[in-house]
Length: 157
Image 1 (spheres, helix red, strand yellow):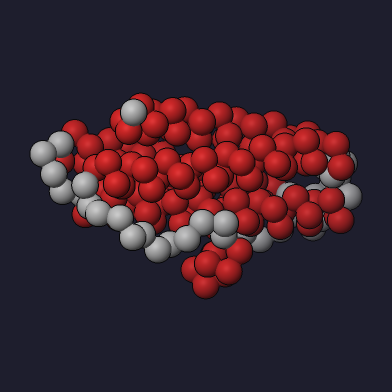
Image 2 (tube, rainbow, N blue to C red):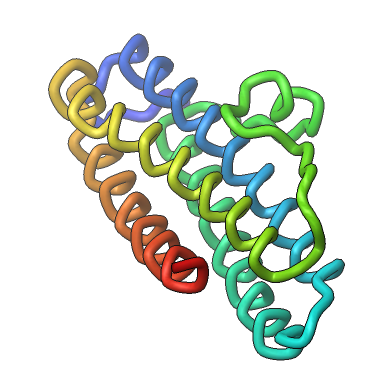
């Protein structure tokens, strides 16, 4: 049954497609955060290892919420790794070291990329696609990423 939520099918499809890209970005970031958690080395291992654990748990919650938002719009969330790699803005490749500074810089860059992607869609969701709900949702998500980026940035300054 199609959702009767006051948004045309065409607009729900466009928004869902953009959310699918966001979901792919979030999944890649989640994976890279797990990598950082698992493979971190250095004298600050314990504290940063615990911080990365907090980040990947928060990332898992974000993933679930993005997928659920796609479902609320009447579409299916993509769930194939191959598809994520085709549509993500991020790269799964990591060339840096396993020290905290290198890993944090990489994660910070990815959070900032996601922030820019979301910021580029907030107004379009509300104005062009008549979906104030998704616009509001991604604004809150952007704020979460901004806070994480601020904290990561504080580590590298």
